[in-house]
Amino acid sequence: MTEADLQVRLNQVHQSDPEAKVFVRGDRDTVHGNVVHLLDMLRSAGFYKISFEIKSEALKGVPGAGT
Image: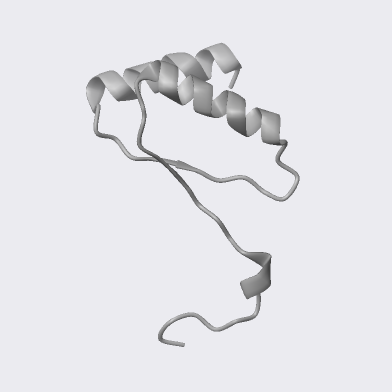
């Protein structure tokens, strides 16, 4: 998907559901500048409530709740 296609899609989603939830997830190789640029794109589409999904390396191997 090109950047222009992504911006169009973000605009469409926001128009159809302004309360849509946005979750941003990257891996350890994700470049900080790309995340900032994505946030700018999300804001320009009208999204201001954005969540980050974080997987902590420090918790690797630690059992989760109920395990």
